[in-house]
Image (cartoon, rainbow, N blue to C red; front, side):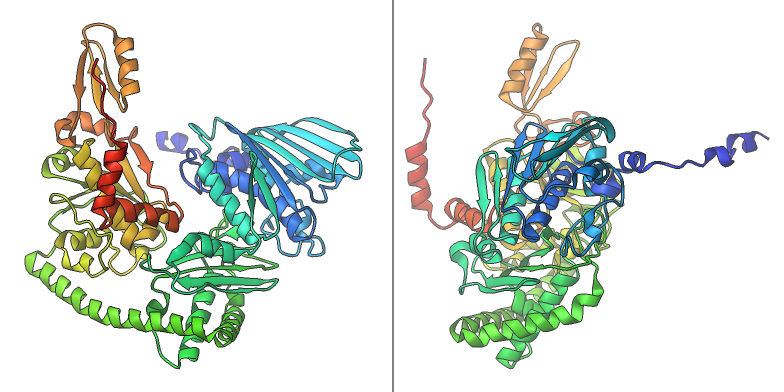
Length: 607
């Protein structure tokens, strides 16, 4: 009887949610991760993207050459100069699911937002949402709060240019601790400009504009590291560009559909790669492997498609398999034409591929020796204390897991004693890692520590096999610790830069000070926090400066790698910009670095 009443399942338990309720309750289905604004794909940036996508669609159809964006704290304003929403449908277009003109091919031929959800989700997830449409001297306006209509207005606006104005503030109840980061917004706007040559995007007074589309993207990303001038093709529905770079390892590709950056690729990217391989082999009359052709390659492909099918609402991966064969054929045909047209560039490309094939054969012998050496030492990675939930499936990339890379036994011991054994692993470095900036890839197989770390992460053959969602550098907060951190960032940037680009590399922030009295303990991550804690506790204060992770007891350390853990993501800058920085600080130019240090040395002034 007790069991029946406890599990009473009848008609009263069945619920029907409105579209608004469903968006707010199941937010992840509509915008993916919520996040706090620290990651490129966090939900607040998806809200911004959904609004800008509508303005971009207007431009694609030939209306409006400028989009103005204003961002102040958490408030976002987007004004386009397209046709404007039909005045009688302003409310429906931003609040009623499956409502919009993008189902009509006569109005929008190559739209991203074909599911009628975009701005409805922005509206539902904003504490303030205002939309105003200007058309031929008339306007219609509607304001909402959390998706609920609050006020409507209409009237004349003789001096206003046609277009749509949208203003929103993400709901603080959903987007907690949100901070919009200018560099992530800038990256998104740059992509928009590359994909829509001739469009001017102005954000807080800064203009983003591209005259040559994907060619500008590749030139900026590669800079002076290009082995040959980028090969570029553009038509109404297909655009691609690529070159080989002296400063890369592996392959780096940007892919786009209807102006949408598809971070996980999809049919268009795989078809482009296949068509590229076919064209190179046909031109060179050879049988190169795809890895040999694409090693050190930096490229981008963009297509325009009437009915794109994405694998999620956030549109990170294209799923239209029916376009593959035709796209492979088009890429092959156009690239062959370009290679025959510029034989000097083509010969440099083929020479690079032949050189890569030769190096790969040499590397295979080094790999074999490394594997045999590792087996002779141990059947497992001696420096790794793994977690129970390490996942090897490509789709989740070890979702929910992390590995701490520590710089010594004492630091590792503190983490081991208080970690979550299900999701947190530890890899212990033996002393200072090798500076690999000016070294070739074979070093990661010849150096035991580099090889063991690569095997620990599962990235020996492909980044698709990455075993952990987060790779966390946990070093001491002193000069040696910072040096080791920089050496590890150099290692990942030099040989596994895609790991950084996809947002997997982090730095563990641990407290520098402990300020306490008999009643309270405050951990401080900066001198400013320490000074504030001293003022707060006032009397009977004891201040401890933590220099090494091993100095922090396991009972304390559990707070720093638990729910309140502070992680700083290692951001991916433009490869060319980052390469210049790495070359200066990590390259073989010791005299220049010494001169720089002496010229910029800050000498403390004694009282």
